[in-house]
Image 1 (cartoon, rainbow, N blue to C red):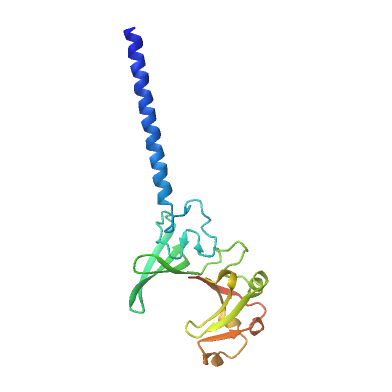
Image 2 (cartoon, one colour):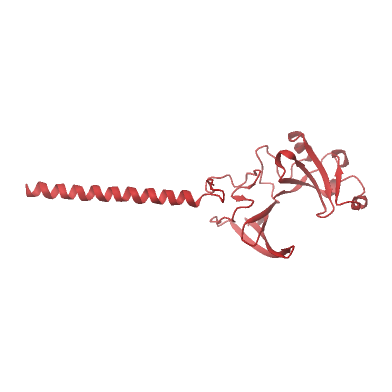
Length: 207
């Protein structure tokens, strides 16, 4: 009997330790889930996200208005440049991968992402559009497109009302008209006929 009693106590101890370990694992999982949430409370799976997917609100792990995420990938390199916008400090954070410039991210003073400029053709949206694609491809996918020239930024822009916070920047050398006549207004509305047939996208801006 003493031996049996001793074994029962031992089994109880093992069972209690097992329950404690389950509780600790559960707490750790909840903590990890909370760490992967956006500012609006929704879960953001940074680990399993496609790092080269362009969405309506960002690209890969980078979303506009979210805090700049931790980059655990050793292939990434960050370089910051201080700028000023309307009296406030902003940082341009250049993201390099394998010594190639991929993204330029503008950060507001609280380290949240203000806008993203995509420079690498590795990034694509679900329709396969990205830097280096033809203007004609964009016009085929988005039939509600609008094209304009911005005197302020000096960019030729095509965008769709379906994704109003995303702009495709057209190669300025593809414009067939006289650029000197584009200074009459801050915004000049253009047509796709104003560009050469093989006009390409050189940058994508998400804001």
